[in-house]
Image (cartoon, rainbow, N blue to C red; front, side):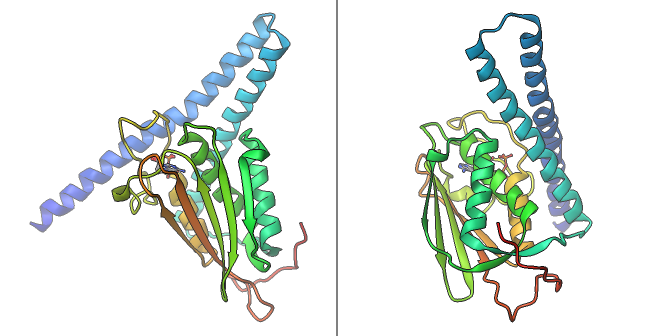
Length: 256
Ligand code: ADP
């Protein structure tokens, strides 16, 4: 019966929403409490220099997670209001994306040597730099959260006739086949007893897909299965002089 289907959908949405609120609350509170605890320890005890450094790194990572979550929530709020970005500029694809990824890695205290770049896009693209930064913040953060062994991220650039491809792969815990299509849905998270108990909101990849869509691009996820790493392929249109910007307001060429 249709009414039961609607009811079912509603119940499912409500459960997703309740989970989301619980997760967001946890995601906001837990890094804050841990930062507070480190600060209290630093303030009240004679902490050895080495331990201090360790605390700073952990606090910076927590602060970064908080910022990332707030950015994602703000992105969603503006998406929901259809208030899309206006800061599109032309950038050199490889150079800019590489720079953005290294910035994300640095913010999450991931060593540069954990990231390998290959291939060549050799073209220009039209980007809203801040939102593309949010895309890679989410991908880098996920690779860190969903990996056990020492993390390795591989970035491959490729150019086709009309679009450029950026492939982002990690050697993390991978994604089960039946989940691949769902991971971009709002609030969707994978619950699996073998997966490390990392908290999240299920918003990261939804935001990634929306931002890429807003750049007239596409994003796909692949994984050979559990334990075999994950791969995200982002396609973005190549910018040529003839083309106007996504929103018709091309700005000056931006040199990074
Ligand atoms: P969150 O990380 O907050 O749960 P996301 O939307 O970023 O939300 O991701 C959705 C789900 O996809 C995650 O819960 C996780 O199970 C899975 N996932 C995302 N990225 C990866 C990755 N790099 N490796 C393995 N699993 C991933």
